[in-house]
Length: 353
Image (cartoon, rainbow, N blue to C red):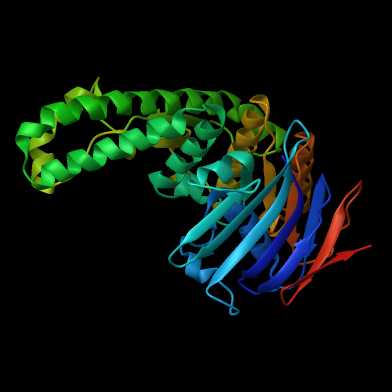
């Protein structure tokens, strides 16, 4: 996928910005607070419905009015162009694709997949399981077409079971357990397949990024104890009734990352965690490419995340995918090859010749 044009209105300090990016490499530089990261926020918000810096749409809204807007012209893998737009405020959203109103933000996610590396990417290693579940679910969503339907069906079943637990409706639990297990097993199997693909590529990805981290392994944890989800639900039913919530299931899953048989978060430095996260994100982009799509790759302040050598290695690897790449930094870059450089100052974006 390529962004051919993007317009941003009233998002943070970006009052009205229009950018015609290069199809391969785009570098935005300027002082801290100038608005560089806000451009990447606009792209990820159009893609995913929310910023990577805050889940609150109100925090993105600039001073001009109560909502912000992002519009883009996107070219797909077949060369067809699409018009996508998103308007958000604290209380509502409206999305459009090729002139039609959208019912689901996932339609924008599918047309504009983005892989993002930013200063908090190390949380993929050291953060809560929810961060790694989102990593898995994003990847499966883009390679298995029916995944979102499976995920939503499981979420509905989980909500119904938790409601029955809170109301002490023991008479409903057997039938609800059957439904939850049916959807939960499908969700588990989809994530497991994807996790195995990521795991099989991790060692090579770390080598390609010239990382010194060794003996890193991944293990998908199902979210329940025992051989089957149904057995785990029955075993913990009494405790679930006491707590009013379901303790076992894919909503508790994790992608455990280990180094030399210990949790990676406890033995790897912050820099090493960033290297592992970079490898995982590059694998995700590579798997998407294998599925016939190219993600737009976004690197926020990559220069400060790595030394010059590793910055160049990560950039070279990103360019190998043939994807469109966006990078932010505080200094004007010295880049070889076709690219566009933009200076960002006080919410204004100017292309430099």
